[in-house]
Amino acid sequence: MHPPLDPLAIDHFNAGRYRDALLAFEGQWHSERSELLKALINLSNAMLQLQIGLVTAPRRNLARAVDMLTTCSPAVAAAAGVDLPRLHAAIARVQACIPPDAVSGEDQIDPARIPSIQIRTGNDDHTG
Image (cartoon, rainbow, N blue to C red):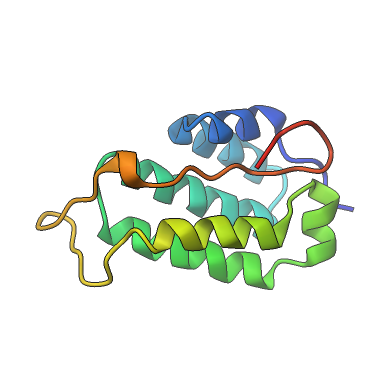
């Protein structure tokens, strides 16, 4: 069984404090190397990069997160309280905001136009 995700990391992520979420997920990663945590680290990193106006690296990190979530066991995700289909749909909404030809340094996306993502867990009252 997959240990629960760090509630503080989830709170940080859901509040849009992606740097804090990234650090908290990385802290959990040191003791538990799972594909789910690796995906959430990439997702946190991508959302942080979008917050500061980058486009190239977040596009790559979002794609990596999707790839990792796709290979993640649904049972593992469910045990950790993550609704994979809902998370995939939320990531797709963010990806749709990044033009495929946009390049960091030349193009910028208004961070206010990026939809938020909530990590929904079935183990508590976190919403998404």
